[in-house]
Structure formats: C-alpha cells, structure tokens
Image 1 (cartoon, helix red, strand yellow):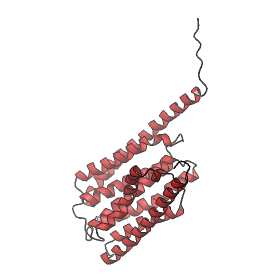
Image 2 (tube, helix red, strand yellow; image 1 turned 90 degrees about the vertical axis):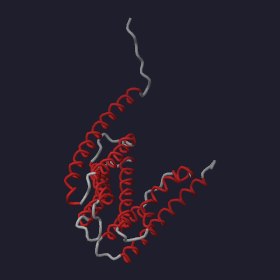
Image 3 (cartoon, helix red, strand yellow; image 1 turned 180 degrees about the vertical axis):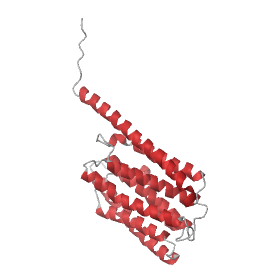
Image 4 (tube, rainbow, N blue to C red; image 1 turned 60 degrees about the horizontal axis):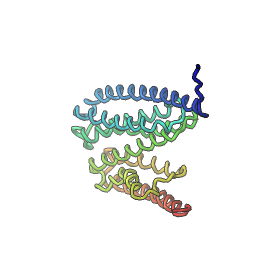
Length: 263
C-alpha cells in the first residue's frame, strides 16, 4: 500500500525559500571569507607604512569579524538571491574603517608630524566616497534591502566613532568631540529603556546630508595644517548639527507613539 503524502498549502514555497536562503548564505559567506582573507593581507602590507604594531592586525581583523557576523545574522532581511554589488562596496568600506580604527589606536606615532597621517586621511576620503556608491548601486540594480541599509548605516556610525576618537587623540578638539561618535550608540541604548524609539523612521535627506557633513568635517579636522582652534570650531558645528538631527528623529518617534491607539 502506497503512502500518500499531502503537503500543506505553501509547503513547497517554504521549502524553495529555504533552499534559496541556504544558497544566499553560502554565497555571502564565501564573499565575506574572501574579503576577510584579502583584508588581513592588506593589513599586513600596511604595517610599515602606517607605523602599526602587529597587535593592530588582530584588532582590525577582530573588528571586521564582528561586523561580518552581524551581516550574516541580518541576512534574513535580505530578500534577494544575491549579496549584491552595493553590499560588496559596503564590505570594502568596512575593511577600510577597521584599518583606520586600528591605526588610531595602535600607531607608534600618530601625531600631526606623522607620515602615517596622510595615508589615513586618504583612506578616510576613499571610505567617504564609497559611501555614495553603495547606495547608488543598490537603487540602480534594484537590490535595496533592510540588510543593506542597516549594514551601510552601522559602517557609517563606526566611521564617525573612529574619526571622533582620532580628532581627540590628535588634540584637535576636547573630550566632548567623542559625543559625535557615541550619539548613535547612545540612541540604540536608549531604545531598551524607551521602546518607542525603536519605531521605523521615514527616509530623510536631512539625515543623510548631516551624516555626510559629519564625516567630511571630522576628516578635515584631522588635516595637519588645520589648527586646533579651527578644528574645534568645526567639530562643534558638526556636533550641533548631529544633535539637531537626532532630536528631530527622537521627537518624531515619541509623538508618533503617543498618538497611536493603545499607547
């Protein structure tokens, strides 16, 4: 007697989705593994030019592994079958930002007279330029996703943190400049205490523009011939703009939650 198996409606599509997701995960893992291997080689080659200790490779590689693990964790929020060129560009930006972070923390001589400072500024400019390319590719190739947007945003936030630390370490601004890099993370922490802040924000040109301004100003502050009195003033303007942007978003989320039924 033959056994008759009756599949529930949608079972076939669920199975197909599982297969497609496994393929996407395998491809993404391969891309990230290749990127990690190449990045370690780049970090090793950069040691003598950036005046880095070997511990910097461990730190940069560790930071990159954390970022890549978060990407894999968020992969279910990527509805496409390909990781996408835009996410590859963001991956390159992550590699650059981790190298810059390690240099800020472990360079043997990170001073205004250091020859390593100009290559770092060049890498920062490259990361800022690539920031405009990944979004363009995602829209052009119709591969935009929640994962890509989050990946891009977190790399941006980490870059701002690294730049604000660099500006402080070079005595281009006071300890308060770290507020620029910490503001995004403080907002995330605040979400645990105020759930209303977890609400989805509408797309905003203001938010994107101010983010670009932050990176440009902090990069400019690192330039050796910019005196501290100027860099401090510029950094203060950047902090004021960022505070305004976060205030607008915070007020919007709180008011929207207050107006919802049952809130």
